[in-house]
Length: 111
Image (tube, rainbow, N blue to C red; front, side, top):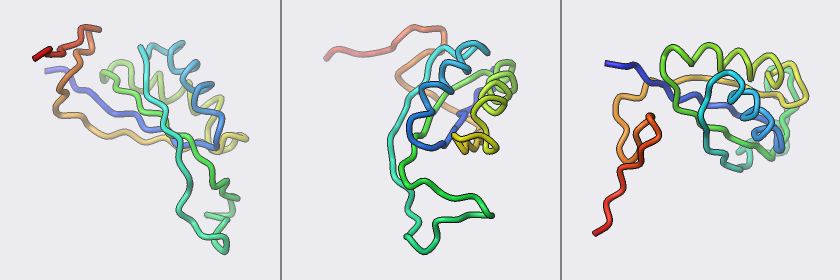
């Protein structure tokens, strides 16, 4: 069984597409970008000494275990927490995928 992971990258607004470019260079086939807003109130605009920009991008990438570390490193080196992007990364194990095969075949039923 191939282990798969959801790579989640949260960054300041405008950096997710640039991070996706780096992820592609490291082997990612694609991803999904979501736009959001931090839930911190105005009095809590700093977190561990880092100023929080309320507008956020979230990049989601599903990757195989052999791709995971290369993708994480590529994004972190260019758009990590110590950059203007203030990007953080984490992974979650994916135990099931329905609707898409990572071999680029879509399993869509037309009823």
